[in-house]
Image (tube, rainbow, N blue to C red; front, top):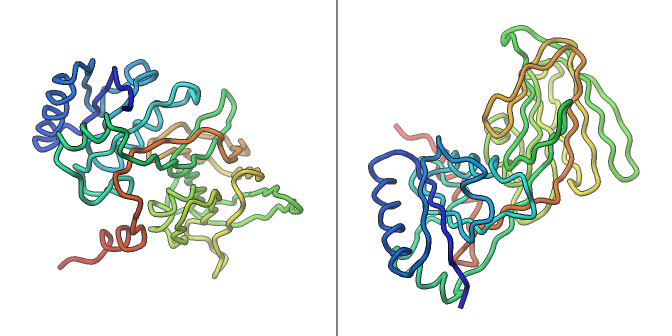
Length: 275
């Protein structure tokens, strides 16, 4: 039996997601579990840290928000993803009925899928991210210069380019903004960081893939740029201010009921053109 005494449910505030949250709440409470609920807009670290399970009801945005709240790697709970959104890269395509899900959790009849994260460090501290860090020109439409330094085993290289910015994504994040910007889709459980340049003036500039566990990426710009982390605006960076990105030792732990995940088909099928 898997011990579950406290659960927090985070849901996207739509009618469908609210109904799913109510069902989970009722089934867990019937089992004598302490249940708390919040919307994805209201969730905070004090709600979800040290819980046994966090139920994520929504899409990828809900999962990214939960990840942002989990910065203390010693207190990260298991996350149960239930799809209820437009983009569900972190969710299984089909889920058992909710009573069956809860029964299987109590029986320990599930697998845990660990998702690697990256770490962003700037003046003032460090933050773990799940998908990507984006450094984007404040004045879009005007070209600005960037300087990037990559330190990896046997490599210490610095280069410059002009363009709109750059993205540094994790392997899970390769299916997000990185893919839309022309970066590669990385499959499997490898731990890498992908640098993808946004509209570079230098034609044919490729993405760069480095091992996350032993690499340091530093980037700065000659102009004012905006720093985004997992889709949320973090701050305006001064000219020449450096961001430092590495792999993280903090992982998200997601509950899965299937050992097979058709990542390529799942990601690309949701990006097809529909007329």
